Image 1 (cartoon, rainbow, N blue to C red):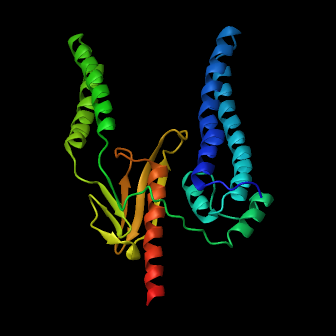
Image 2 (image 1 turned 180 degrees about the horizontal axis):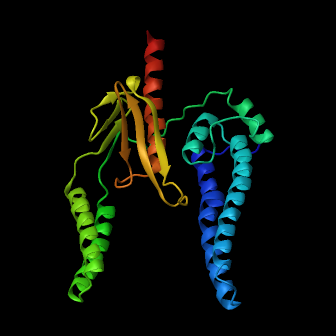
Image 3 (image 1 turned 135 degrees about the vertical axis):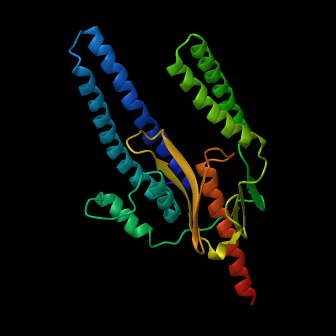
Length: 276
């Protein structure tokens, strides 16, 4: 087999070959459709036909490229269980092996899934990681909201009360929300080799935490660019789901931390068992 690659490297390749083109194709098709319709004076019906064709082309591209990526990734990545779990979150795998699964993909998975993942620690990751609200994100949204608010004042004075009201109410809500986040320095997530704690859920040790992952939820009917990332896990009597969008972290980093800290906990327990 060729040189092995990490899970992160495989997912980065998926972004470059699947996610980004899947966003670009419909946008290019919309622009091309509008240009051709205007340049050749075609009927207005050409526009929706061209747009629908762009989305059909995107769907066909994703289907072909996801299969090619799966064959490459499942062949070259050692920790197939971790890769598959994160692939499911990224909508690159449906989590099933059925008659509809590509035969080559199914054969690779049947062989590789027999092997347990190998845990490798990352010494660059500290004993504990704390996440707070992102100041950079909050300041950026506050600046944009201020500009929109100024536009709302302009329309009120014009007067155009419809646009003016929208231009005042919407930014005021964002200003209220993100100013609170800007002033809030409290930890929103604390994660280490002992367990996890969030701003809304008390500390729970790894031994009682289950199904921890980063869930990527895309809005129905939208492109891959419209999505929210959540840290999710089950604990005794409940389920935590915390939005990562406003925090100083992102999906690959959190997914890696979950794997490393869970692995450190399991490794420490194995050592203690061997000692006793």
